[in-house]
Length: 211
Image (cartoon, rainbow, N blue to C red; front, side, top):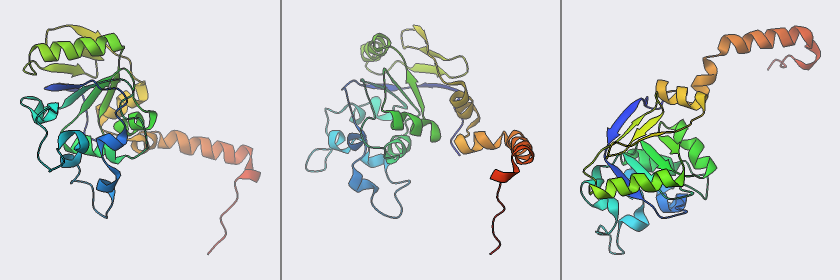
């Protein structure tokens, strides 16, 4: 089950390049094998994070202090576009990322974040740019705060921003539940509907043949 998300005050790292796709977040060859979960964090942003000789790229923000300990990413437009690989979210989660703030995300990446307990926050580009500027002004020392219950972001300089989120997905993150678990919370309603529908339309409810 995803880890519940309520409030988070943490180091945030701005990665403002547009159209960072899932192949940049995690290369497909890193997902090949029988046991990839738990070993992907070190490969997140591999092409940006490492030089051809395998050493760390000192110019990449997540290789510098204090950004190395970031739990929040502030991102450029269309972050997480490209393929549907859920491993992109797993790799971010395993390197410690708990929330991503941007003006837009790839649709499948966005959904996968909720399924795995990462909060993707969509706000206007002007707000994203303001947050990035605030973070850079403190060289990452200022903390960014997200309150999912109140649906607010507070920048390092104290500016507060409101964000919108689907109520069902918000509830899932607050409780640490994925889509299946949220659906099972309505098990009584589902069974009641099925019983009523079986009585009203018995011809569409075929009994399974015995083995």
